[in-house]
Image (cartoon, rainbow, N blue to C red; front, side, top):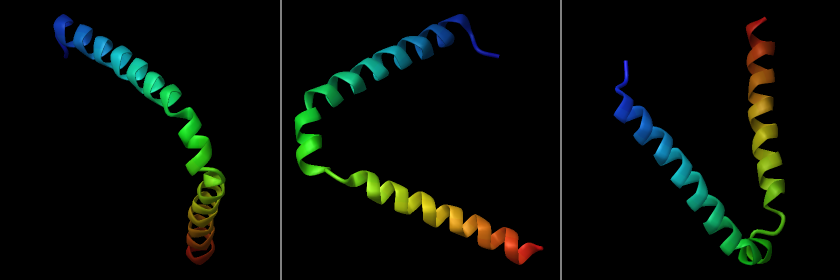
Length: 62
């Protein structure tokens, strides 16, 4: 399905991409704490909204 070269490239790309993301995140960690304080509340609200949509879908289907 994939050649050996393609698999090596994909593996290399994933390793370098994850390493770059970790480096950038650690570099900006102090700014994240300062400017994005409390952003988990938005995530919880979004997940609750999606959950409510699924519950409504199940309720109206039955």
